[in-house]
Image (tube, rainbow, N blue to C red; front, side):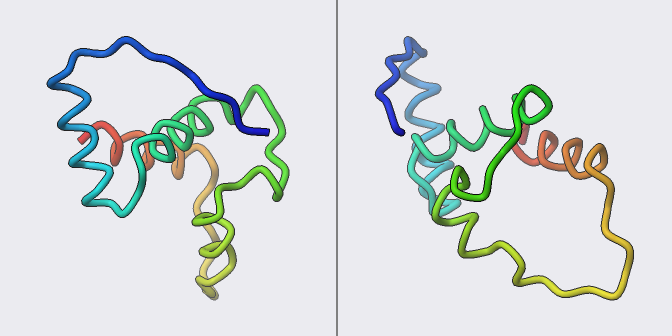
Length: 84
C-alpha cells in the first residue's frame, strides 16, 4: 500500500535531486523509496511483491556462471552509487 509522505528539504537540494532522478529514468518518489528500502533492508523482510515495477522487470535478467557478490558488498556499492 502506498501512502503520501511530506518532507521538508532545501529547495536547491530538491531541484538537484529531481534532475538526478530524471537522468536515471526514475521519479523522485521512486528514488527516495528505493533509498529507504536500501537503508532498511536489514530491519524487514522484502517480499517480491514489494519491489518497484522497475526492479521487478530487471529481476533475473543477468545470468552468470560466477559466484554472486555477497549482500554486504552489494549494499556498499549501492550506497556509494547514491552518494555520488
